Amino acid sequence: MEILEALVSQLIRCKRILFSNRSLARALRAVKLRHTFNNLYLHEQMLTDAVRLRAYNRAIQRYVTSQDCVVDIGTGTGVLAFFAAARNPRKVYALDHSEKMLAYARATAEANGIANVTFVASKSHKFRPVEPIDVIIQEQMGIALFDEGMVETILDVRDRCLKPGGRILPAKFEFYLEPVQLLEQERIPLIQEQALHGFKFSKTSIPPRSAYYFREIYPGDVEFLLCEPEPVFTFDLANLTLEQIPKRFSVRKPIVRRGQANGICIYFKAIFDDDISISTGPDSAKTHWPMLLYRTPARIYGAGEIFAMQVEVPDLSGHRGWSWQIGPQEGAG
Picture 1 (cartoon, rainbow, N blue to C red):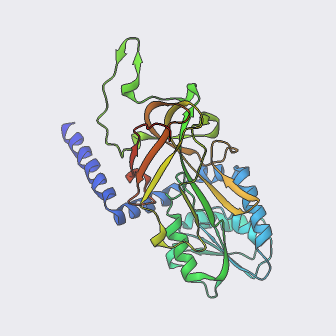
Picture 2 (picture 1 turned 90 degrees about the horizontal axis):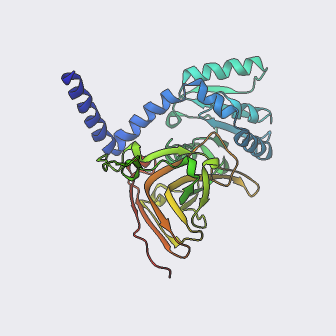
Picture 3 (picture 1 turned 180 degrees about the horizontal axis):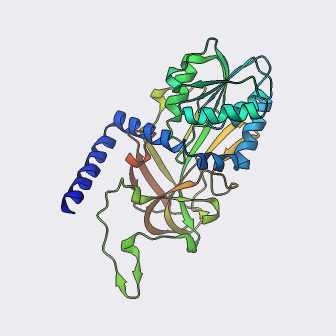
């Protein structure tokens, strides 16, 4: 038993070392994502997300024409490629690195008489279309927006394959980090904050970058935001460069509603155009994307106090490696 425990301890230590290396961490995440997206249940969840499918269908109907060459990056079940195929474009590529999912998508196309989609088993960086692409359809958004490598993937395909003036659906994004008060029944205090039947619990020694500090929440779990929401990062994949990716998020703004901050709510908005968008935020309809809550010690803020936070972001696609500094509370003004 002691040998087994020592082996597990060494594996955990090795994992931490690997995740501290940016390139290795991305490679490990890619392997994990490959296995994740082979899970048909995840695709079933995405197919039942009416908010997601309605927005994509509206945007594709609006922006894909019969003159276009289209690629769907990470096609999965093929549904977005099938939306595009219904517009009768010159070419539709359904691209995925999972041969298992491509086989399923092909079978679905055949069952529905869809003959104008070309299925390509390839990683995106190896994709070489015979002609420039007019429209990139992408749904590379993770729970924390960037954790599926969206920025690196789409910028690479854009720079190599997209025709000048071509379109990315969606291209514009807003990323939010907001102090939030949860409904009382949804609050899970850190262990050292809990006192039950006269017992107090010791403070944990779990490292601050551990998964322990993150949990998934949904709009119905949130009572209210303490501040007026403002994105910490707004960008457009049509013209974003890697040099423009921030290494730090800084927030300093007034509390507009007195409350208890139970953590920092992480969510995003994907924007197709002025009237087609998807938001995963507290005031939006539930989607298959949960929000992430970065758990912090509960703290009471009064209206007019200043909420201050700095988040160091060594790797945008790896939120587990971010460093958070919140507070101290400051007076108004």
